[in-house]
Length: 243
Image (tube, rainbow, N blue to C red; front, side, top):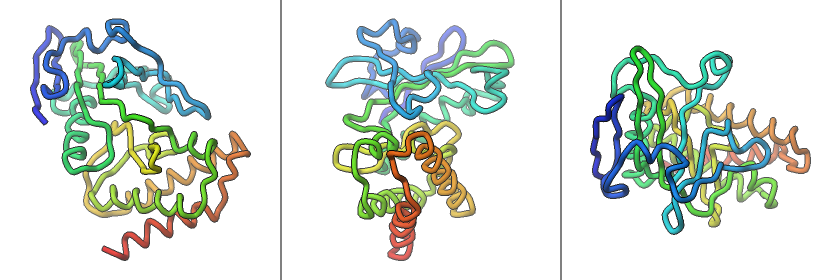
C-alpha cells in the first residue's frame, strides 16, 4: 500500500496510488462519477444516507461522508473540531483500515480520504474499495436460516478481530457483513482503534447483542433467539481457549 498526501486549497487528500493513481476533490462528489447510487438496505441497514456506491464494475468504491450520530448529530450534522491533520476522522480511519488490511483482516481496503477545513472546524469523507457480494448481517438473517454453526462461525470471526486488538466503536448487525462464503467482514471504522485486551471486548459484544435484539423486534420473522447468541459466544470463547 502506497500512502500519498496531496494538499488542496482547503485541506488535504490521503490516498493509495496503487488503487487511485490520480486524485482530486472531484472524486468526493458522487455526481462527478459516471455511476453513483445510494447504498440501500432493509431494516435500517442503509445507515444515515451518507454512503454511496460509485464507479463501475469490476472495481467499484464506497464513498462515505462523515456524519455525527446521537444527540449532537441533531445539532451539528457533519462538522468536527480541528485538532490537526493526523487526528481527522477520515485520516485516522484510512490509516487504521490500511493497517488491518495489511494484516489480512476482512475489512474494506482504503482508497482515499480527505478533510476540508474552515477555520476551527472541518468536514471529512472516505473512499474504500467495495467488497463484492456482501450484505449486512441483518439482511443475511432475513434471507437465510442461520443455525448454530453459522452463529459459532460469527463468534470465531469476531474473536479474530479482538485478538488483533481491533476495537470497533459501533459493532452492530449492519456494520458486520457476510459474504457469499459466509465469512464475516467489518465495515465503518469511524472512531475505531487498536487497543490492548480489556473490558472493551465485552462491551462491543454487548452492543452487538442489543443490535440483534433490536432488529428482531423490527422484524419478528428474523427469529433471533437466545440460543443463537449462546452459539455465537460459544464460538467466540472456544476460539479464545484454543489460542
